[in-house]
Image (cartoon, rainbow, N blue to C red; front, side):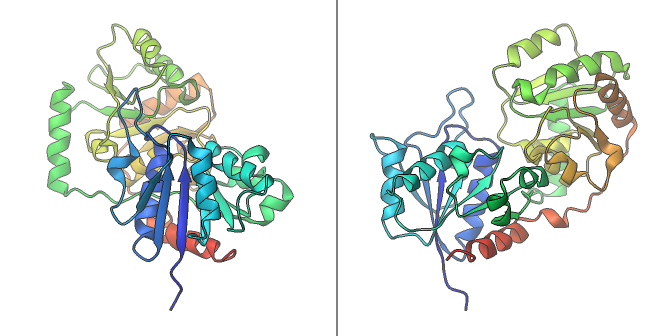
Amino acid sequence: MTSRLRILHCLSTREFAGTERHVAELSAIQAQSHDVTLLLERRTTDARTGGDIQGFLCPDVKIVRAGPAGYLPALASELRSGRHDIVHTHLGRASARASWLRRAGLAGSVPVVATLHTSYRGRSYGTHDGLVCIASWQRDVLPERQREACALIPNWTLPPQSTVACRAALRERMRLEWRIPERGIVIGAAGRMVEEKNFQLLIHAWKQAGLRPETRLVLVGDGPERCALQKAAQGRTDILFTGYRTDMPDLLAAFDAFVVPSRHEPFGLVLLEAMEAGLPVCATAAGGVKDILAEAPECLLPSGCLEALTAGLQRLEAAAPRQWDMSRYRIATAASSVEAFYRRYC
């Protein structure tokens, strides 16, 4: 019988986005077979959106929060406690603190690994024993030592939890709420409204695409660029903003197609969710998107190209639903690979 591992996940954020959901889902499935602890900041609520990982955590995962002194002392205490067989850090802040403690000789002897949810930085990840890359572009730019001690394990998407009837009802309700014309086509896009997501270019391409009057663009999300985006779309009844939503995977039932215009996507989880929902897609060939759509190059667009994005929107308006092979992107497969990775070190 395989031994039960004592796993510590470390995440130092105050929002709820793709990485936070990754950690919540991975820790939950690991807790079915192992003892899992998650070290979080004292407060984890996003002041702008209200998103919080707390509402998505499995009750079988033990939660430890940083105290008034901050995350670093709490992390140091956990690293030296002897209560964990492996420590798994996520994103730069938690990873950089773990690296600093190791360089200072204050981390004990427990193995420390990290998932690269974004780019590699030596200051954050240089002392880690191993790294999990979620996309091939990350692995390709690692220093030689880290490349030899890495594993490529892509993110995953979960099959819809709701029934076909429920999704049909949601589709009808949302399209009524958004006042979608009868037989109107809805092309969706979603993400944090920041410059990197390139929603400005998407709005520009939409304006010049010449789509049918009943076709709509629905932008899901919030962020510092939202006001500028709404100003760019001012006067356009065919562009809708939903704001931040916690029901994104289910919300995809209301869409007919999906577009990802980002300048860079470390992985592209929202694209994976759209494919799981059976939507035709187009996305810029940036970061992990190239891995996801490697077998569908016709869906890839050059990054930052207005003409290509315009043509992509025109293709999506006419596209039929599409069934994608999602077998590579199942959480059980990823969890098994992560556990095998851990056992290299403990």
